Length: 20
Image (cartoon, rainbow, N blue to C red; front, side, top):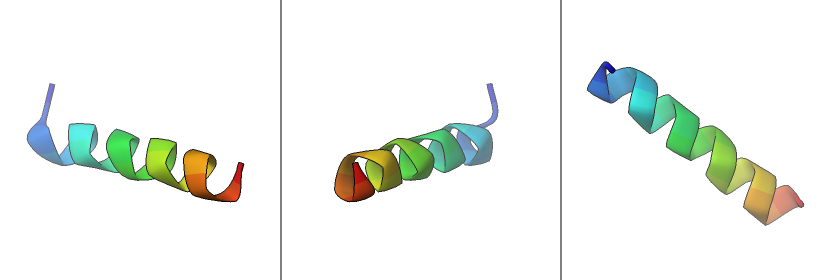
């Protein structure tokens, strides 16, 4: 997997946790 793609997934997960 691309590091950038992985970072994007982590960013989405963090947003879900923060706004969740």
